[in-house]
Structures are given as structure tokens and as C-alpha cells.
Length: 71
Image (cartoon, rainbow, N blue to C red; front, side, top):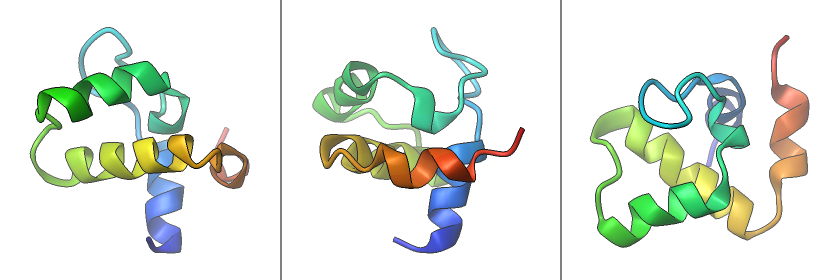
């Protein structure tokens, strides 16, 4: 995982669904787990970032990403 990935996770808004507008790092872990269990992460960059976000949350490393959020 590169530094830019962490910056993107902190500053990319969810473009659809129940949590539309929330930054990826702020998505609830159960929501991300649902995508993982269903095997239906979105295609492309968004899906990759969501998978990385889930890994960060599972490992309890959110504190590394949240300071990267832009206001």
C-alpha cells in the first residue's frame, strides 16, 4: 500500500448507496464486510480502495489514515 492510497482513502467520498458522501475511511466496517462477503466490491479504483479500507479497519489502523483527511 502506497502513501497515495492512504490519502485517497481519507479523501474519497462514497459515490452511491446508504453512505453516499461519506469518506471511505468513515464507512462502517460491517458495510465493507458486506461487500467482501458478497464478492461485489465495485469494479476499478473505488473497489480497490474499499478493499484497502476494510483491511485498514480490520487491523485497527484507522488512526494512521484519519489525520490525512482534508477539511
